[in-house]
Image (cartoon, rainbow over all chains, first blue to last red; front, side, top):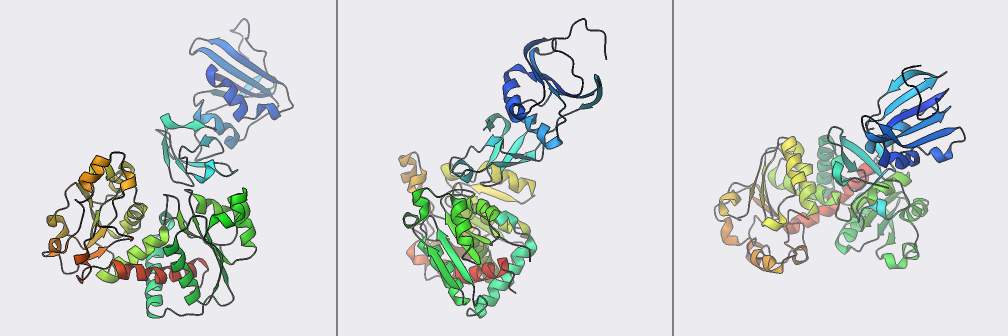
Length: 153
Length: 303
């Protein structure tokens, strides 16, 4: 563990997942997308911490939880640049990048008011047809949604 | 057998389209075939469409199958708030095949996910109407003797006309050239133009409905310019009589040219065209039954 910092803003994690550099304004959305409220292990949520890079940032330290790829990739739409560290015995054993998945289920709202997904109790399904520019296509009504028009559920 | 549904024209490969052409041709020559003996087909019309429903029900009857269903959503449990999923699940217990029309986009795709019974999309909102496209392609195939290398001119409402969008997609396998003739307000949307560019399919857009373009065309696909599509009614009054095909405009057209229209028409094809041997729109409607026989057999895996 690095000794260069004199004091950590948030207590260190023994085993689990640390997600750093979450944009502050997205923190609670990230919490909700990762379904943190359903966990029973120890979770530290740091909000509006000072960051040299970002000004303000959020941190999540989740004990004894190691996310599956498709779980963690759910946050890629709202927080694509977070640092994801897997921690065992206080050491970072793996750094992960999050990636936009090929398919987004139950995350994005379809902007077509006549789309079946806005009328039935069902999950939306979007194919990511352009990862670079973030363009999604509704599996049901074929509507293409550009990054700036994406509305989360 | 793997369950097959017929939901979107985008799902159809070139091979499938060609196979459907051959089957449609077969049913045109031999319409009465007892291939659906003992099978029950449900026609669920959550939105009324008499023409499409009668065409599908004729197809089932010619194949010797039985039809159950509804043509008016007011008499069903949907009006009591039942979800589409529940209606489809319930009908799946009764029928071997579900043919459905729905007012919402994507309804048929969703229905195909919640049941093991094959679904045929008979129109989902403004999204898809793939059986219309199969009969359109068959009409092209039959009148031209081929699908490859044709010049297709589409006229009228290219913005909202779903038959136009699906036909572009369906014909894209066969190296076509397109002319799109529409008023400014009803031009083909950019996403379709981008799609054509990505697939390297040549096209030109024109505002003016000129004989010069008609004379180069193999197929003239006319559509209705609908008043309700215009936000500016002055604009509608200006363009409504511009995109009318008259017999005199066909004088120098190619001998193989045929005029198609998904019907109903209002005034966009003048009555004096009806007697021209190049007018094919009434025969086109008749092909609908054969095309739907082919689609039904294809999804049920009947050869």
